[in-house]
Amino acid sequence: MVFSLGRTIFRILWKTLLWFFGLSVVSVLVFRFVPVPVTPLMLLRCGEQVFSGEELKLKHDWVPLGQISTDLPLAVVCSEDQNFLKHSGFDLKAIQQSVDEAKKGTRRLRGASTISQQTAKNVFLWPGRSWIRKGFEVYFTVLIELGWGKKRIMEVYLNSIEMGDGIYGAEAAARHYFHTSAKNLSRTQAAAIAAVLPNPRKYSANPPGPYVQSRISWIVGQMGQWGTLRFK
Image 1 (cartoon, rainbow, N blue to C red):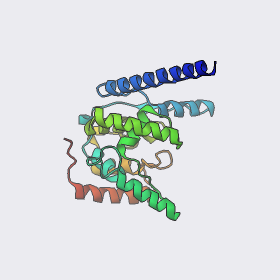
Image 2: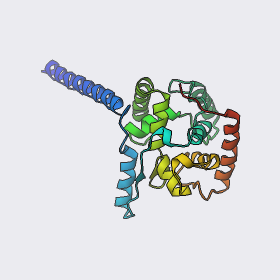
Image 3: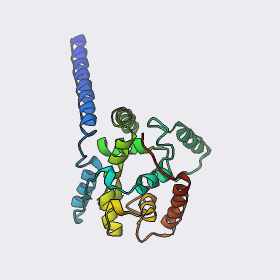
């Protein structure tokens, strides 16, 4: 009796695992070519707005990477993940530094999450800091690194990430903050959008507060040192 129950549970778990693996691989392959229409975070934010009685805010307009100013990918790389083109989804050096700082009790303003990890989390997962969600994040990061490549990851990232209260993606952010298109963003404007990404609902790209302004100056300086961002 016990053996039969155990075998049934194992069969259910095994089938669930196979279904999850199959659906996750298919979804990654689909989004390799198809624009991501909505993310779990967008739905969560909408739910929060509805339950709190606020006006529903969701601005999200997908545009190809070729219709986004080349300064914006450069700005987010300089701001968020300077080893983006070098690593395979995980910046091991940054992770080790973060662990070392945590052991010392130092409060870090930024984590070690890469653009690839942020993309995987935004497109496929829910917000949170649990080890279970982190495990899924690692899994999906590996999948998109293998199935998409850096250029597609950047395209999805710039179209899906939260860039303000109810603002998602480069085109919506450009329209909201600067009344222009993502393609026509200047270097300073791109840096301003990148500067608010650590907390886009707290900070504003325009007008920028003292902290954001200092970040803009630093990012623009880093962009000048980088020159051009080239995808393989």
